[in-house]
Image 1 (cartoon, helix red, strand yellow):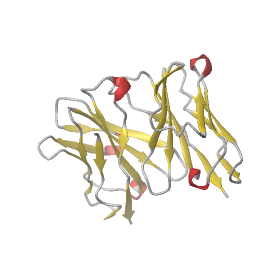
Image 2 (spheres, one colour; image 1 turned 90 degrees about the vertical axis):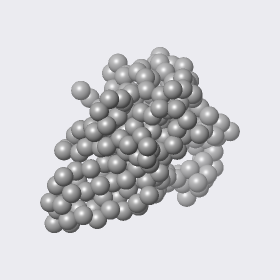
Image 3 (cartoon, chains in turn cyan, yellow; image 1 turned 180 degrees about the vertical axis):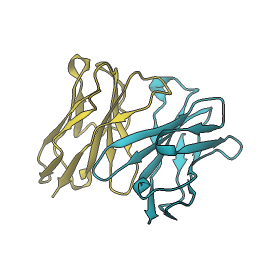
Image 4 (cartoon, chains in turn green, orange; image 1 turned 60 degrees about the horizontal axis):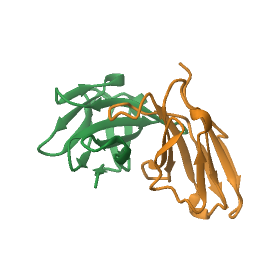
Amino acid sequence: AQSVAQPEDQVNVAEGNPLTVKCTYSVSGNPYLFWYVQYPNRGLQFLLKYITGDNLVKGSYGFEAEFNKSQTSFHLKKPSALVSDSALYFCAVRDRTRGSSASKIIFGSGTRLSIRP
Amino acid sequence: EAGVAQSPRYKIIEKRQSVAFWCNPISGHATLYWYQQILGQGPKLLIQFQNNGVVDDSQLPKDRFSAERLKGVDSTLKIQPAKLEDSAVYLCASSLSGGYNSPLHFGNGTRLTVT
C-alpha cells in the first residue's frame, strides 16, 4: 500500500536561513511525488513535482526538492526562508506503475513551517 | 484562468441533518476530486470522477455520503445524515487529466461543523 510520512509536525526557522521540510514515502513501484502548500482558510496550492530525470526539481516561490530513491525521501528545501513562507506544507505520492484507476494520490499529515523575523 | 469554485465556504448543522456542497472545476479539467481534511490531518480522497464517471470511491462512506457529477462539469457532494465526526473541511480539486503527473488544483474548501 502507498503511504507518505512527514515526521515533523512543525519546523521553525529564522528568516534568511535555509529550510528543510522532510518527507518519506512508500510505494510498491515507482513514485510520482508532489509538494503542496496551504495558507490559512485556503485550499492547497501546487509547488512542485518529481516525475523522472534530475533528482533535484525546482518549483514555485524559490522552493526545490530532492528525490532520493535509496532513502525513499523527497525533502522540500529553500536556501533562504522568508516570513511569507510560513504555512502548512503537504507531501503527496502516487504510484505510477499502477493503473490510474487504482492509484490514488496520498497526502502526508502536513508540516507547519514557521519563519520568524 | 478562473480557479476551482466551491460553495458554501462555511456550514454549521446539527447531527442527523443533511448538507450539500457544490464544486465547479477549472474549465476543461476532466478529472474532479472530493477530499475530506480533518483538522491536523492531510486530505483524504473521498471520490474521484473522470468526466461524469466514478474512478475511485473506495473511501466514500456510502451509507451517508453521495456525490454526482452530471454532464461531467460541476459536482455536488451530499451528507445525509451527518455525524459529529464529519466535521472537517471538504476540498474539491480538479486536474486536466487523470494522468499520474497532473497536479491538482484545489478550491478554498467548505468548512463543515456538525454540532
